[in-house]
Length: 198
Image (cartoon, rainbow, N blue to C red; front, side, top):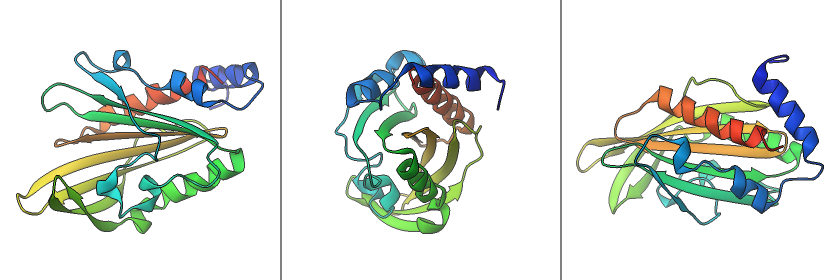
């Protein structure tokens, strides 16, 4: 929103970086364990799209959008049954980033239902829109509910995608108990860290 502290910070920081962010810039802007509740630890992951193999039935989450020039990713895991958090930052042109956002926004239709495998167990996934605070130039969010058919256990994956200029911020929160408030809080922190740098 024009005039808001968040918008002002983003505008000021964008003018401070006179080039496209590099992989090093993206890595420096990732969430860290200090951004999450006590007990979380961060582990770098391979830069291969925001999702994992269990979500291969939803291409938007398991393949890079067209035009990615650099990216960085991290996984953050908490103790016990804590929600796990992963973040992927991808740099594109503004035009390509906007096209990628359209793919993320279409996930409730394009990935409405699909199947996958988690720890050798077949899982039936369904995707629905998720209402969280809007961030950046564009943002969209979904909740993917996975039913582990053999044991009738539900796994929830919240996905929030935010565009800041040509930077895509994709945050995924996974756990056995969904927490929309936590997802929105973490996505907000992820956006703020990027907007503070460019």
